[in-house]
Amino acid sequence: MLAYAVRRLFGAIPTIFVIIAISFFMIRLAPGGPFSLERPLPANIMRNLEAIYHLDKPLMVQFWIYLQNLVQGNLGPSMVYRDLSVAEIIGSGLPVSIQFGGAAILLALVVGGVLGSYAALKQNQMSDYSVMAIAMVGITIPNFVMAPLLQLILGVELGWLPVGGWGEGAFRNKVLPVIALALPQVAVVARLTRGSMIEVLRTNPIRTARAKGLPERIVIGRHALRAALLPVVSYLGPAAAALLTGSVVIETIFGVPGVGRLFVQGALNRDYTLVMGTVILIACFIVIFNLLVDLIYGVLDPKVRYD
Image 1 (cartoon, one colour):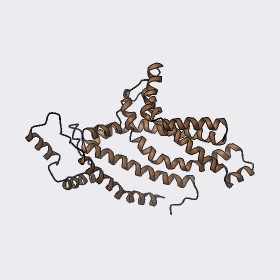
Image 2: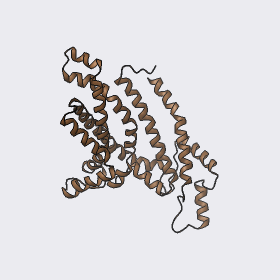
Image 3: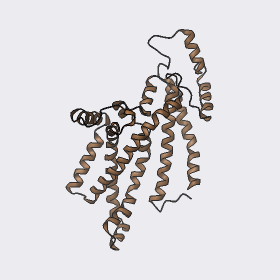
Image 4: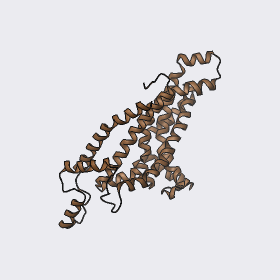
């Protein structure tokens, strides 16, 4: 398994390189630049700034310089936030995104898995229809609608929770962002678990386990649920990467200083190095989580081998 993981990581290097190249040239095709202000800078100051950040050189030379710095682990300085490097900026936002993104993943997996399993065991009954109706509502209502509703009801009307701000990581400030971020994922996990569980319950191994007289909780918990989680694990790979690197909408609505909000600010300000650093971070997370999904497959499904 270790050899397989190493091969996958080395095989991901060309993919990450292509992502870096496309992102590097696309961000520079956008109109404007990091030093384009409403009141233009004097020509001599503009020339000095472009020389400092190598913007006066051809694009291919800029790309080569960026790759050289990247190989050394240097994401470069921010072009907008002076005296701060991209690594420092991401380092301040990533722990925040990981905290509420990880909580959202855990909440989605537990609540969605329980609801989906319950709906599968009550197939075509009122409980099943109710859970799936709630799941459809969770899928169809977008974050930018659900988040303000939660703020209005739980924050303004009832006054139970703060409607925004990070509050230095206080638990009360995390509740609403985590719920708003997790609700669509809860709905998707519930639907995936239900469909997979229904299919697994009709397979021969489950019939054999029941014929041997195993308790129903053992049949469901140890055999059926383990096999039913395979589609959920496949979905959670890229979903976890997106959640852990921050949700742009949720972070903006709740004023959370995470990576997603930094990415938006960097794109609006044409902060080339900050945008590139965020893109590389997200790409690495996607590669790592897809690899973890494949490894977890080997644990859940004995038929999978990585020889």
